[in-house]
Image 1 (tube, rainbow, N blue to C red):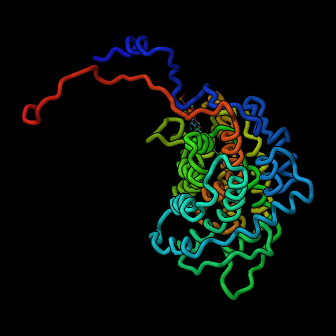
Image 2: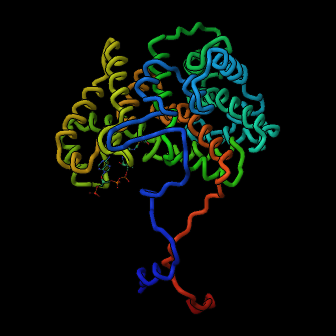
Image 3: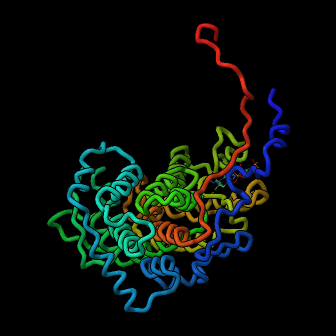
Length: 402
Ligand code: ACO
């Protein structure tokens, strides 16, 4: 047998921390989280203040450049983004090749990766102007790519961006608009979606952001690094959780709506089933974003003529879990994604688009963190060590004798 303790002794000065539970990978001055007290701040500003008073683009500027913009700086930032929303026609043709039932996250990561092929003039990570233009291109083009991924899936023609519209309005029109038909934009939907993007904008060294930094630490360009981040976000334990929550609620509903029975299943760990949208690696008290999202869910769903019964189911689930020792003792509380799916559904997005919306929101955080990493003189290529537990040396055996 293998003697792991002996191997560990033989491996000099290596810390084994699977999942990086207690290992910092960098120093950063972008986002502060206090998981015990449920505090989240971007560049020092509490998330609650930004959610109430700022906008997604203003907060993006704050994350990327470190300070809130003056009105002139914000106008210029917005204007530059609005004028880079078009996709190269040849990139648009990429969408013809994807199968219609492709997951839009897979389409998004591929198209973002392809930006490296179209914008070879802005791939140098050490040229500030090139980094700036790729920042603008990403902020501008990712919503267009996301809308096209959706249009492709439903078989509708793609709409060119309308640069006279605001960031969120333009995205909504490209997603839900139909050519030659006026599209009415609901200002409440715009406001809530803008806030949801803002709430997702950064969350320090989470899985996708760490991926962006790790890929970037090899000096890979911003497009390549961000497309890796999109792929990391795809997983159900990260960005994919918002889709998984809605599917869980629909499953409970189709099973007769017995919330207690579902909770029992989770507690018994039957088939490894988890309460999706609950729990967080860092927040062990509550996720401050979840409270803001819950309020928004009640606002948006409350305006509907026929409120979604899944909201009641979600609230019942939350109530039962928060009163149950299994969840309390493990410090499991709703995270940001427990209620977002319900809002996205009410806005008309199919479940497969939920994680794409998370990616739209997280984009400025990925960019800000990549830029901080590339400027940090202490950055080294990310290269974790391991504790080897395989065989010692053994001799090759000819195939006939195996
Ligand atoms: N439902 C049921 N039990 C859970 C849940 C959950 N959602 N989350 C954690 N637990 C239990 C685990 O089974 C474990 O119990 P045990 O000690 O009896 O084995 C204990 O709580 C600790 O769980 P870990 O998996 O060690 O916690 P970790 O910090 O690694 O995981 C994670 C965090 C991945 C978010 C986890 O809570 C989870 O899977 N949640 C559901 C998926 C989800 O909502 N992800 C979104 C995260 S937020 C985001 O990306 C925006």
